[in-house]
Image 1 (cartoon, one colour):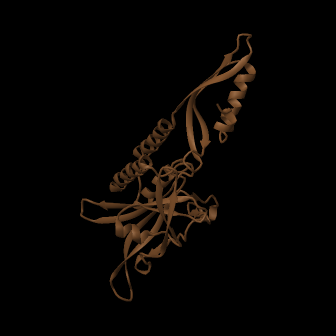
Image 2 (cartoon, helix red, strand yellow):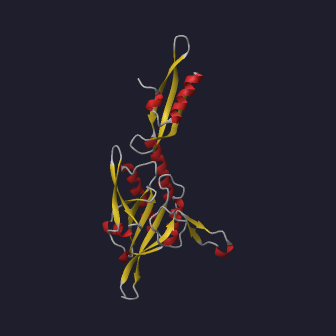
Image 3 (cartoon, one colour):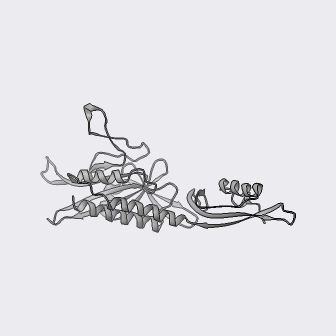
Length: 276
């Protein structure tokens, strides 16, 4: 038998609760208690439903504490992510253009635990003045970092504060001048899973468009992001491509359920953009 301080050494909040029961002789219970644990090789958020009660000796003194805990992490995550999806579904504001539609989406994703930040690049074809041919260009149209300037002289213009731990985040990227191979591969191992990330100097927009699959990127501060392709086909047979960049919650790994959330969220965004 080991003391609680050894078993739950990384959960000081739990130890404090057990001490409170032992000292007061009164039981406590609660739902969705937030804690952080390193059980899978990284610090992750977890939520617990709990009940802690004292065990008494014959003389009435507290001999120990019996604790019953049920993890409710997935329930909390599911409810939180469903709230995000519903928020996207309820976007009914009229957008004057595709750009303003993207800005509405970014505003809906601000201050989100599962999507710490987001950026969206629209892929356009610009005519090269030298060759006369169309060349693909990625244009950054909206981010969750965008703020409307309050100064009267620049009223309603956006200011954009991109974090310095990001890869190079250009407003415009000529995709004909970016190599598919300008990156290194990094492997991250957890206790129960392994993930592959790219390290790159700039966002691998070209690679996402080429492979038409999500790509995960490791940033300068070792946080993670995912790039997801978006394909739109309008009734006039006009096609449009975009790349959505999303931050990954530092306290969650990108497991199957998290990835499914991203895919459903992507579908909601595609559905919204189709009508603008």
